[in-house]
Amino acid sequence: MPATPAPRVDRVRCPFALIATDLDGTLLRPDHTVGPRTRAALALATGRGAHHVVVTGRSVAWTRPVLDALGYTGLAVCGQGGQVYDADAHRELTSVTLDRALAFEAVAKIEAEVGPLSLAADLAGLDGQVLTGPGYRHDPVGNLPVVPVGDRAELWAAPVRKFYVQHRTLDEEHLAEAALRAAGHLVGITKAGPGEVELLPIGLDKATGLAFVVRRLGLTGADTVAFGDMPNDAPMLAWAGHGVAMAGAHPELLAVADEVAPGNDADGVGIVLQRLYGRRL
Image (tube, rainbow, N blue to C red; front, side):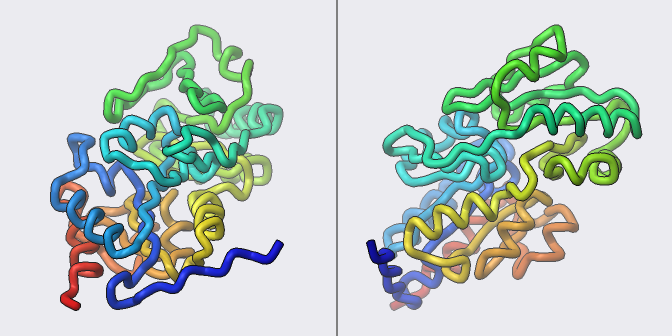
């Protein structure tokens, strides 16, 4: 069957055919809502033909409340690229799991270097729960639910998308460096928030998940403007035709960004989109 031809894009009305936005620290304000200016700008852009794709480290179970609040019915990239979710049909188009034997070996090697770790497991599946092991410090972003377990062995009992890893004294920068040295050949390692790193399947990141969506829509990275704030957004911003870092973003992201927007507390996504799509015709 021949490939679906890419849609023609009117670069005056729609300078980028796809808008990719991270959630926490980017699209969402500190109160975990989307500001009215950003909502209006997204409506303007999609009205001119652009697709909006949410790209987040959150699993589908943690992303769905935001999508529902937005009335979002498109595709979303969740779980650091491991899930592509069709919000309209409520089904996964892709689901990548982490080899638990490799993850177990990786954790052992990291602990041999830095000492005991605290872990949480992001379980696979549309309704996959996040299990938190002993000592894990949960940051309840947007009141997202977790299930504490008393025995760390329970974290390995079912298929897992990724592990969240914390150390008692190391911040995410030093923990990620140690994890890369000890286990970077076994698992992917990314910094997605203060005080912890994530262990993922090697080669998985937001760009790989977004590339799947873009190909499905008959578009390319050059057709994409992407927004983010943390190092896990760097592959996506580097891959996109135009990468936008939020004010106060991590230095690793600023290094690959084409532009710095006002912060998420100032509707920075909306301000940039209004400039890009709001030009007079």
